[in-house]
Amino acid sequence: MAKIKDTDYLHLSTRIRAMENALLERERMDRMLEAGTVEEAAKVLTECGYPELQAVNVDTVDAMLAQAREELFGTLNDLAPDGEILDVFKVKYDYHNAKAMLKCEALGLDPERLLVDTGRVAPETLAEAVKRSEFTDLPKVMADAIVEARAVLGKTRDPQRSDMILDQAYFQEMEQLAKVLADANDKYLRLAAEYDNYRKRTAKEKESIYGDAKADTIKPLLAVYDNLERGIAQYDEADAHRQGLELILRQFTETLTKLGVTEIEAKGQPFDPGLHNAVMHVEDETAGENTVVEVFQKGFMLGDKVLRFAMVKVAN
Image (cartoon, rainbow, N blue to C red):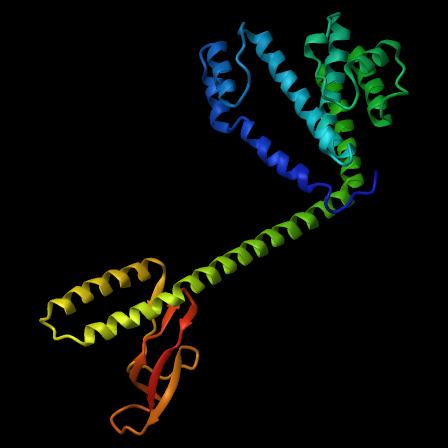
């Protein structure tokens, strides 16, 4: 197997995820199985992006699915850094074709309609090998199994016994392929984990950048909040100017709240250097130790980030 770099499968993984949208989901498979006619079943396929057929029958639907499968494997083969990766998915079609050829040979039938083109071995190559009984171009495990299954089928006329021989060979090849691809799979899993960590890290960094930009935008608005409070304090409660400023401040506060801004609790709270900026200390027997007794300027937070520390007087 060719040496695989850590980044070789990133593009392939992304493409495959995009192609998954065209796969038949369980719900659509059930609808096809429950369809009363071939036309109804074909309509489900068009919902997944398959082309509409001019003539709809079992043969044309089967041909369309076969073509789609062949195109899919062709695309994956072009994208995959190492074609051996796809052998894990192709090998079952080789054994399907072998079973069909041996049974049709025993019955004197033409197997062409039953063959699938997406295996490792072209159906024409396999058919020629079976016809001539020359299997040197086939994988050894498969070649030996075909010879044995053919002999058993000819002797017993029991297709299940011949199928069992080919199935055993199929699983043996799958085991061999799994061992060959183990290193590549480990690399892929490590790469997938690294990519997931990278995605989470960049998402967190983007969130942090957005949060910082949002905080920088809001901070200057806090001075407007302060000025509104000072303006309100200049008027009596019954004054229309005060009432107008209070309405503006209330709307302004609601806007800040929608942006995620909250006021830092201060008065009567224990002094917290992570939230409060002590600019004065006093002795006060009526207050608890290290307690905030007065707020000179309100503090605010954006989520768990301090926008502005509360400027306070601390007792004792």
